[in-house]
Length: 222
Image 1: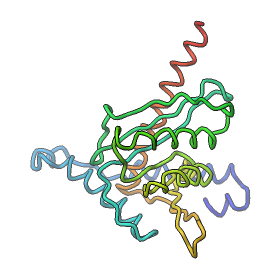
Image 2 (image 1 turned 45 degrees about the vertical axis):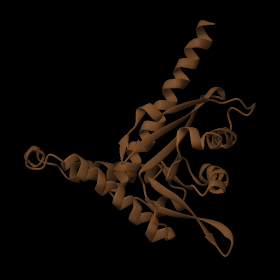
Image 3 (image 1 turned 180 degrees about the vertical axis):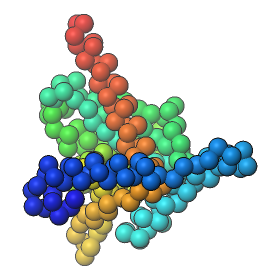
């Protein structure tokens, strides 16, 4: 898939991606119902495994030892720059913590520019670190540009940022090398860490889209 993409054979790469997703679906581990009756804490144990695996990936690539008690994920939604919104979803100990979710209505004039929107959101979020709580890790839906933008803001508060690129479900992980910021790409295998990151990303997308749709309806009715 990567070789095809490098050769700009994107349609063929897309086909391979679909084949991989099909293989992942039919080979994913199935948790038998009996296991839940045998272990009432099985769901909690599975989530702990997801957090541990993501933590190990970050340690392997960047040498980070993070306590992933609170993870925040951000996404931006707009229609050709109109009614631009952003979402902040929070997972506490690997589970959705919906009472902590936040919507942002983008105020800047570059509403079709995800980078400017994310920088605005990051600056606004940082003003509320004490009030809303501080994340152990921030994930952004996007590639190097989006990851770099949030990293530049959150790193001032010693909060680490990674990105999740939809194209091949790839983590974008910043790292300082000889005082220079570089970005490592890590193609997520079909494991529990991947399922955790996907849940975060999909929830951030859903929540951003929800607020975006509300604003569209208000605009239409007005």
